[in-house]
Length: 479
Image (cartoon, helix red, strand yellow):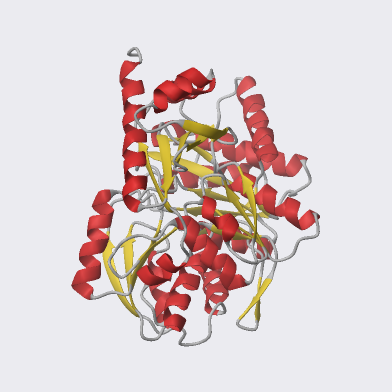
């Protein structure tokens, strides 16, 4: 079975999750909440889902399992993950989001939230142990769908109210912004929020079929679409998000996407944060930004959240987190536009998008010029899909087994000077460019990150890195 916890929740093939496995993990989560005192019989628990074809059925199965555990299920419908998380925090309810996020349409997953926020790696282990105990009983898992009260409007209204207070009225007047709607659950809310701030909004590319959009490795086909729309409609920016609406995609006036870590940096500066927690895959130039202390973690929202909480425990204030995909988290309350913005320690695509568009409107500069003004090193990333997990593990073992193996593997790219093994393998070469190899935590994919002083150098390092990965995979014996 393909199901496993990765960088953000449980993921796997839809056919492996749909049916008894969905009921199994929903039951395991409910049992964990009840046994740990984080919920009691009769308490509410929220359900949300994305637009994947398998999500409604998986959601209904989870609703049945949770109801049989004695919880009261509230259906929040097709809602962005940050909206579901916010509603859970405000109502003191745990939640499950049925989503595969940005991964291909034949996959799906479940994100779990305690009443106080996203689960930790310790929670994942406990849920896994509950699931294993249930399976060991050799009793068939009941996957009968169950009822759920409709709370979609309440969840949506709360999230809209939060985002309506971020900027002054009319703050985006004068901007013409495209919203690439595709199949993200954030598509209609983005249009509504941006129009309410005075932007001239053009809705683009709405799809009835699920389209996986990876905001950390935007596909060439997607970039071509963005560039075409930007020119055709004379847009100042295009905004979008991944499937469950927690990772932003913002392109400049030419249709070129801005790096997610730049979006996070702009959001951090917009809030007045003094501490930003971000994974090792984010741009190394972040450490040079004035007034902002950078703390590095492994890749994945649980690690970023733990890093933020550790900063708060150490007495830090103004703490945010962001990932290379642009998803921005807040660990402390902030005052924006004279209103308290409650801490939302889960990835959010709306805050960084609003921060960037607000900066463009205030400065009256094109986004391409604003991005260049941050003078970050050029960072690119991409992934090889359908790269078996066993091959990824073999590659990482080979590279870690000795300096000779690493040097030989990197020979087409450059000579290694220093390396970090925090998450994957991040190598700084003698010419100061960086290549980072990391197996995906969510899917059979191998990711490659490149960083250099110029776009041409970064592109060359990325292409060579991907070529080295492919060559290694081709040398492996067939399964």
